[in-house]
Amino acid sequence: MTADTYFNWRDEVQLAFSKKTEIEQVTLLIEQQAKRLGFEFYVLFIKHPVPFTRPKTFYYCNLPEKWINFYFQENYSPVDPILQNCQLPGSLWVWDDESAGEGAVMMRAARRHGIYHGISISAIAQNRATGILSFASSDPLNNVKLTTELQLKLQYMVELSLATLSRLEDISMVSVKLELSDREREILKWTAEGKTSAEISLILSISQHTVNFHQKNMQKRLNAPNKTQIASYAAAIGLI
Image (cartoon, rainbow, N blue to C red; front, side):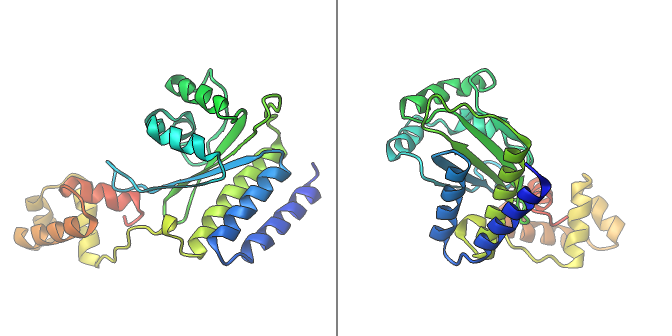
């Protein structure tokens, strides 16, 4: 691959995504790009940072319906090696049983459903959601050969996919929106530092009642279970 070849491809794909106005068009384009790279299947997984206990997740894919049903029936999500190996943005994983850990059982089950070799890569969207794009093959002999070209194209594809879904205001990219006043940001900052309400009231020269009022209000708006989680949630979605 030459630099010209890659950037020509990049310009072509960027233009194609920019013309899409419907989610179905976006997913079809992802599928077409997967096939151009020698894969039959794709999965785009999107996970939001909050709430921590049950974060919002979304899937777009063209996997066999039988496998999708079996995946959720067996509750593979907690041991899914793709989610485990690509949870940090910028991670790349070429599928193999050895590094799949407990998820090796899932990989074997996938092969029984006609899904063999694959590769996954992750990126973070502007709204702090994490996207994982996977391409997979139905050919048991089609081993994935990781090249610089493949890695660069996958990385750009996942970033472009997330940006396009965000541009189209797809439900998968809708995140918690919270406008904070300067006073609320100050209280959040000191809450994140581990200060108590009494300490924050002294630092900001306001009453403890005012501090508690703002904390409880933000707790309700963020649907956070306690004061500590308010700051954690706010940091996770980039508010502080």
